[in-house]
Image (cartoon, rainbow, N blue to C red; front, top):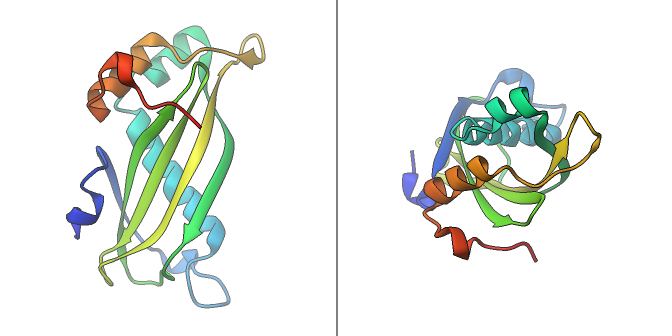
Length: 152
């Protein structure tokens, strides 16, 4: 796999393109990319204490919005890698960025990002990102806690 295309991503999720991912236009349907990104995002969050905190305290992520730029049509068969990293943090939200790479064609097939808001599910309101999650992000991304990238 062309890992040089994913060098700046601390977490890489790898999967196969399934036949059923394609649509009538004989390429992977645009909505399937959201599932690929979601799987990569979950793999990233599994490297933090976020899911444990969510179970114990009821504070966790909820998707606010997505953006995707399709750069190359994927088709079956292919093996893909999706790099994920956090590119911005605010008190109650973060932005995760993705790059999806096709092994078969050695190209970037899509890039995108997701804004994720933290929610107190018990109170049905926004919540600050838990400090243990922020510390895990600092470690994974190589940030100094005082110099986390903000959200524009």
